[in-house]
Length: 71
Image (cartoon, rainbow, N blue to C red; front, side, top):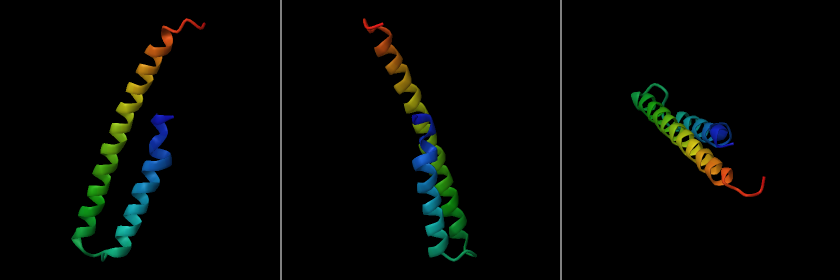
């Protein structure tokens, strides 16, 4: 489930932020390009962080439940 977190919270969050910034700033200014680029970098960083956390969580879960006496 954590692997797909980008679909249900990262994508709407960053798309909404991009649409908002496009509405606030003039589209011809160079600052919009920099802001969209910054949003893309933040999206990528959050996505990678979620992937790492998901892998760690699944590894820990498998470790915890592999030694379970209930089987």
